[in-house]
Length: 123
Image (cartoon, rainbow, N blue to C red; front, side, top):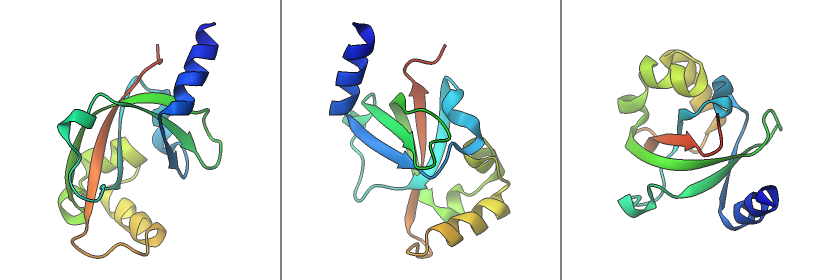
């Protein structure tokens, strides 16, 4: 019964797709992820919302996670080893190179964000 409830509930929430399970973070209770920032500001009222995170390459089963908080900035202001190692398992130079290769639409100074998540069902 609980599994059916989780499955039904997860079909109603927002789904986020990542390229892969970077740094094996989807197995963790708490994790960060660097990605594009939303257009406009994310209201604080969105924090605490559950999302389903899926990987495009199926490197991890979907995870239901709660958005705990978010730190916005630019590639230049966020691209530090303490964020890039935890998020993608890369040093800042490797992350910057990867980001620019995988986001050709990115323009210098455009906003990105560090998202802080809590895995809702991790032990």
